[in-house]
Structure formats: C-alpha cells, structure tokens
Length: 212
Image (tube, rainbow, N blue to C red; front, side):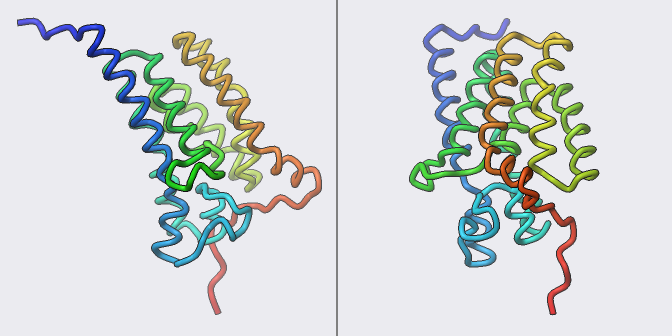
C-alpha cells in the first residue's frame, strides 16, 4: 500500500508545530546555561556580554566554547531539517527562522538580548542548503584562522550565501532566507563594526593562557 498522504489540516498542524518547536529550541540559551552550571557566573557580565559561542569561547576557552557551538548549531538545524523533510523548504526556512528569533530574543531569558544568530543560523543553512553551508563553512574558517576575528568571518561569510544558493538552484524561499539572514548578521554586528574601526575588537585566542 502507498503511504497515506497528509491532509491539509495535518500539514498545517505540522507546520505550526515546527514553528513553535523552532522558537522554543532557539530560546535555549546554552552559552548562559553552561557558564552558569560549570563556572557559576553570568556570561552576560563577561567580555562582550553576549551569550553566544564566540564570547563563551573567548572568555572561558574551548572546553565551554565548543559545546556551545555544537548546541547552538543543532538548535537551528533540527527544526529546519524536520520542516524540509516533513513539509517543505518554506517550512524548513520558517522553522529555522523561528529558532534564530528565539536565539536573538530567548523565551528563557525573559525575551532579553540573546546571541547574534551566527551558529544557530549556520545550523539552519546546513538543513536547508547543505552545499551552501559547506562552502560557507570553508569561507568562515579561512577568514577566521587568517584574522582571528569571529565577527569579520561571520559577516564576510554571510554576504555571498544567497548568491551561492541561487547559482546552485535552491528554491526561492532559501535564497530569500539567506539574503535576510545576511542582513541580520550585519545589523547584529554593528557594535563589532564600531570596535573594528576603533581597533578595539578582540581576537579569539584558540588556546587560553595557562593559569598561575
């Protein structure tokens, strides 16, 4: 027997459920939670004050930075992947966008400022446009390891992604999402741009100095 075709109502319910799931997963402030658990500190009072992986890594080292990167990527990837697989590319894009919104204004932090959506957005891109994500990851690492500026790598990587998606034949919803995400990355890095112009932006140290 052929598998049952979902009804319009079932599809709508699944679509809405994935949007809610995306926002809830995106709202999980892993950078804040892990620093609280393992260092008993509020990451918002350290470094740039951001809860994202870059500030955690820069302030506490890779032992906390790497888990935050992985978890932030996954919270964007999971709802977007489920949306693409079970409904459509549009659902994947919107569910991933909901996760990014949650990362920016987390429910679990009282809707106060969250992260800058780079790692979370990267997870969404891997789900909806894996070839674009792989190329983008290569660009990000090349820029990051040559400059040690995560902000510069994030901004310069985001800009060409919608063009790459269009050239590789991804749906219009994916291209529009990547264009909007690139604009969002630039806007959320305004403070970094000011620090770069002033020469005060901090480089990420891959190894923390030994404690004495």
